[in-house]
Each structure stands twice: as C-alpha cells, then as structure tokens.
Length: 249
Ligand SMILES: Nc1ncnc2c1ncn2[C@@H]1O[C@H](COP(=O)(O)OP(=O)(O)OP(=O)(O)O)[C@@H](O)[C@H]1O
Ligand SMILES: [Mg+2]
Image 1 (cartoon, rainbow, N blue to C red):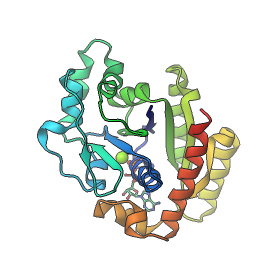
Image 2: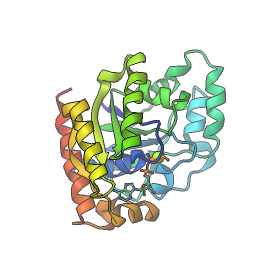
Image 3: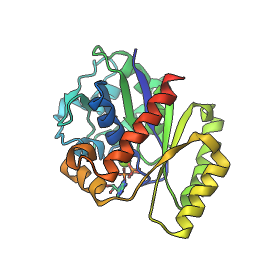
Image 4: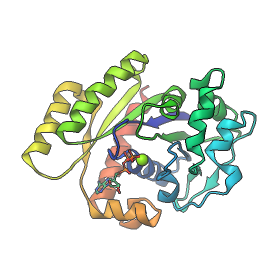
C-alpha cells in the first residue's frame, strides 16, 4: 500500500519542489518506487525531473475528466515516475470549484491508479487554493519545507493555524529547514523554529548549495548530478529521517 505525502507551504520558494524531487530520488536509490505528482501549474517538478509532458497525460486531465485512469511517465531518475503538469492546470482550479466534493478530486484520482508505488509525493503550488487543499486532503502526511529566515517563520505560524482549521496540523510529519547561509539572522530563525515546533523540525538542514540549484536546471536530482556533494548527503540524511518517521505512522 502506498503512502501519499504532500510537500506544502503556501509561501513561495521554500524548497517544496527541491525537497520533493531529491527525497524521491534518494528513496528510489534504495529500491523504493516513487510517483511525483506535479500539482503546481507553473510545474517546476516536471522540468525538474527532465520531462516534457504530452498533453493528454497531465494532472489536469486526471482531475478534470474524473473517470480517466492516471498514467504516469518515467523520468531520468530510475524508480521515480511523474504525473506531470502543464499551465492548463491553472484552469483546473476554476473547474474544481464547480465540482462536487471538490476538496477530494485528487484523492479520488490517486485511488483510480492501477500501478503500485511505495510512495506518492505531491508537489504543491505556493498557495492556499483548491489545488493545495486537494494535495493536503489526498495526503496521509505532510512535509513542510521552509527557509531559515524571519518572514518564513512568521508565515509558518500562520500556515499551521490554517492547517489547524482544516484539522490537518497533526498530519505534519516534518518541517524541513533549507539553510540560507550562516548569518546570525538565519541561525536565530532556525532556533526559533525548533523552539516553537520542537521535534517536528527535521534535524537535517539542507545547506545552500550551487549543486542543488544546478541539478534542478539539468532535470535530475543532486545525487545524480553531484554524487558525494554535501547537498546529496543532506538529502540522503533527510530521506533517512523521513523513512524513520513514516514507518512509525
Ligand atoms: N539547497 C539549496 N541551495 C541552493 N538553491 C536552492 C536550494 N534549494 C532550493 N534552491 C533553489 O531555490 C529556488 C526555490 O526552490 P524550490 O523551487 O524548490 O522552492 P518551491 O517552494 O518549490 O518554490 P514555489 O513555491 O515557487 O513552488 C529554486 O531556484 C531552487 O533551485
Ligand atoms: Mg515548487
């Protein structure tokens, strides 16, 4: 039985897509079969996994033609599969609003999937709109990537209040901190996150690394682009922590 994990944070540029791709690749390297669902109309996970989607095989079709079976694409990362998005997905937000049970359309679509996966990772857009709500409702657990800075800390508190209103705050398996350098302000922001959110914050901090950013632009994980780099090692350590937490769920 697969576990569905949504990478969520309505704040933009916090590392959702980077965490999603690189943890997926690290798990796949250990023999797990992982599906990445690109639920962002701007679709960074799709090029980030080196895929050019064909129009009839996107998440938009799976959501808006509610009877269509999901078909997934192979990526350059062995063991990582993709349900891609195109800009059409922006229209799904409008169409979802008119549907019955509109918060659970993605959950229903994933239930129609025939192919078995160990993990389904949903990469959410930076919003609290219906696509993000669908990602959260479809998920067994949530990973919240966050940058170590003061505004991100403020936004994190607000996001947890939104999750509480949705009855989903307890579904957060981990907060993954992306370091923004060695400044005092970054260290203080990380300390505050650990003070407020305790052991929900993963111990591993993803360091700022040119290799991590480059890997995305080459359509591969940092483990493939720069094996042995500190970024690759950090994502392996984060994947270890992730596995330990989901196995105890
Ligand atoms: N550890 C890192 N070191 C350097 N750059 C990074 C690192 N992690 C992510 N980045 C870069 O930061 C940017 C934002 O990361 P990413 O796209 O993963 O965030 P996101 O939360 O998915 O953004 P959005 O909210 O727009 O979907 C990207 O350009 C990415 O390549
Ligand atoms: Mg993203």
